[in-house]
View 1 (cartoon, rainbow, N blue to C red):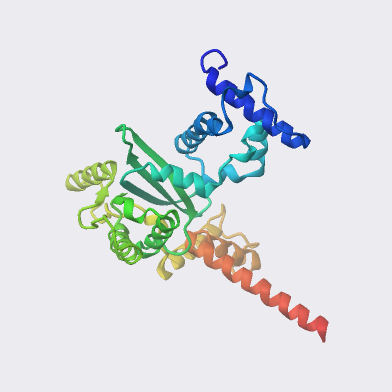
View 2 (view 1 turned 30 degrees about the horizontal axis):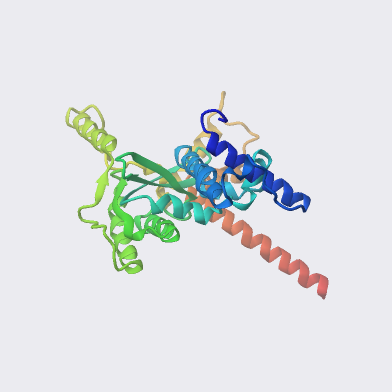
Length: 319
């Protein structure tokens, strides 16, 4: 570094020396070597190079913008380069640096459910730089509350776009071919239209569907045509596991549990009692875990019950 980039090396040393002297409460005299660059030149060389590397790390590694606000991250940077203490930007400033250089953006979003029945929504942004280089970054990753309706997801996407202030930069929305994405596009277009009077996005032309999913649908249609899969298969239901279970679904789950409880070697186990507390708890657990929405509803009810119990306990203590 010292041999190949002597200017930046000297600037970095100067910034470190100034920071150390300030920490000791001393002045900031400059010797002949460190005075090669003035203080304003330090900011235009080493600090700008640092910002560039920091932005590259955020974008390429898909780190959240708030990563740079963590105390541990700041401590690490200051330990390596004390001179950075006056220059480390906050998350808001970093967002402005990233998107101020970005042209028009394509927003991508996808929702799915984890193995432990928690629903998530990921939102990405992609753009072309002035050097015709493709850039993309994860702009938010949220737990999706409520049903996976297009309106619900549109509200989440609009919230993120609004927080970043990039409404006027959105040119296209990329998604899969799930049926609820049509509703998502409609509601998102209406919401962004109210947020910005200079909206560039035309929802009728700017909805780009995921090519792998299009191919998947074509293959499913072919399999359906040659009777390789049942005719009642819904090939468009890409995320059927994320839908709310109906009452009939819940009844079927209970019926399955009943059959499992009775299917034992040699007949019915006399210890099994369908009215027992354990059996009821097991059935309740099956229904709660049947979808993220059921899980969310259960947590809400539990929180309300705990709150009511606390209030009743306080009332008894006061009386």
